[in-house]
Length: 138
Image (cartoon, rainbow, N blue to C red; front, side, top):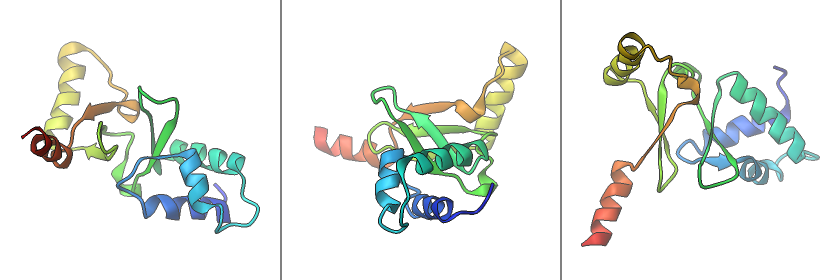
């Protein structure tokens, strides 16, 4: 993929917002003032290519009609593990510890199921949001 100002700006913007899930519109709004003449089509095209290359994680919230994007460090191999997304704050977690690897292996060996890890997203509530919910309930 060619290095362009738009591509570099998109990566930089997503790298500085790794704890957030962002729509293409939010990415466009975040970079439009830094690159002269950038348009939404360019942003959408670059986001798709970056997802294909594994540099971004893309997922769709079942309650929204928008795709969300989040930066994935090159060494994360996002197509090789499961992700979890907090239903409250939207943060995406990379689940690649031994337990998850064993779970995926068990799905394949015992249940004969091939899990598409690149497209698997568990919906969870993270520890931080869970603490907030508990404090609100008291």
